[in-house]
View (tube, rainbow, N blue to C red):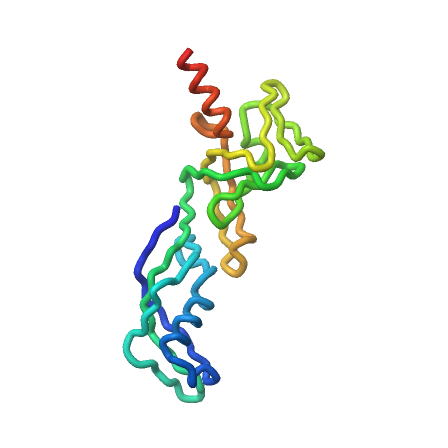
Length: 185
């Protein structure tokens, strides 16, 4: 889920940037240091906007840089267990597939796709139900639930996010539309 929040932080302006416009330097450094970082509670900062300096910077003995407090608007993506997500299948592997939602990918294990034995067709990049013949291919839109979250603070793209589609109302959007039409008939 995307959220916007006003935050404060401290950035270090190195000595070689002190001859620049201090507001511009603080803004650029804040963006470099804050964007793409995982914060507490599984929040991935996507964008640091409207960066403003707060007061004068501080100089620490033995360090030529200036420590500047800044206030900014943080656009972040928050992962919440049990949250429903909309995404699309972006990769098919022998053990399931990866679903892209927002800035991250989650694993959809073959046991969590449908109430049917799923066979992997890697040649055509599809996951196919053995009895129902329902298939899930690259770029198919899906609705899933986040069931596990293990965030890698150093490299958010390496985080482990587990998904399921085995509950009512979850699955490939095309399947859900077909199910609704069958119920109406």
